[in-house]
Amino acid sequence: MRAMVLDQFGGPDVLRLGEIERPRPAPGNVVVQVAFAGVNPADWKVREGWLSSFLTYGFPFVLGFDAAGIVAEIGEGVSGLAVGDRVVVACNQGRGERGSYADYVASDVERVVKLPDHLSLRDAAALPTAGMTAWEAVFDVGGVASGQKVLVNGGAGGTGSYAIQLAKVAGAQVAATCGPHNLDYVRGLGADLAIDYRQGGVLDAVRAWAPDGVDLVIDTVGQGSLLDAVEMVKRGGLIVPITTLIANEPMADAARAEALGVKLAVASSTFPNQERQLKALVDTLARGVIRTPDIHVMPLEAAAQAHEQVAAGHVRGKILLDVDSALDR
Ligand SMILES: NC(=O)c1ccc[n+]([C@@H]2O[C@H](COP(=O)([O-])OP(=O)(O)OC[C@H]3O[C@@H](n4cnc5c(N)ncnc54)[C@H](OP(=O)(O)O)[C@@H]3O)[C@@H](O)[C@H]2O)c1
Image (tube, rainbow, N blue to C red):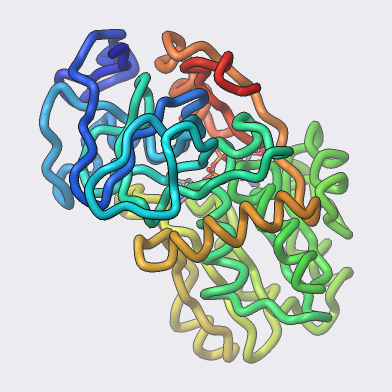
């Protein structure tokens, strides 16, 4: 099968189109023919070797946590899915196995969710990592409740685009930061207030909107972009930074947070929650309660350029790789 493979860690140029063996389904696994593979910031971090102290990667390696496609083969002990089913997949790449930048990908059945007929494979492929992480931050860690005020730092990215919408689903009022070119985009996702962070004055804008402080800040950007978040949150409120996997990430001042009665709790997408979250996301999208972020589709062969764009940090919504979009009928 075709795959974008890595023979070593390194820059975008280590990605090459190659031919490798198609995966066979282990017991409890499903092999999916990939229509679209989702691109996430973690992909370039894995490519550069940032995660190699946690996982052992065998070369040639294939990147890609997310996919949507058609069930091609089913392993022993799998029930509830059949060959030919249209599915979304949060594949086994997070365990160090080969990922979704390929014609076929294997996944534990728990993270393969059948799609209703009216959902496109394109929309589904945008969901897994960004959606599950947003779900984790909004519901599992953030515990957002109706009537609360929530600030999403980085509202225009993949995670931010879902986080804004999920917080609205929970009945919260939502403010979101973004660049000037994305103000209308984040309002379109449901943000009650869009703040242009490039103008400065985010703290003043949040204080004007929430004079008593917000209940929750979800920080999808990190890198010191919102170090004064502690000054925006009410006593008893919470800051949820999403783990960026960047070394020496500057964090909010824990002593200052404690003095102000503000809690800090990081969020990261974790295997035990992913089955529940992915099923809930498919259901929420299928019911039209949330919509798909803006999507930019690039050819599989352009994975290196996709990585450069994602690493630059200003993609709106999601980038998908077209592996075989003709499957999306
Ligand atoms: N640990 C986990 O499980 C996990 C899971 C998912 C994601 N993550 C991490 O979370 C981060 C976000 O992921 P993602 O997929 O949402 O990334 P993304 O889609 O690539 O995010 C890009 C967005 O960030 C916005 N942005 C950049 N600088 C900003 C700033 N200073 N203030 C506000 N917005 C800013 C950009 O908007 P503008 O163009 O408007 O600036 C752009 O739309 C990444 O570091 C990723 O690795 C971790």
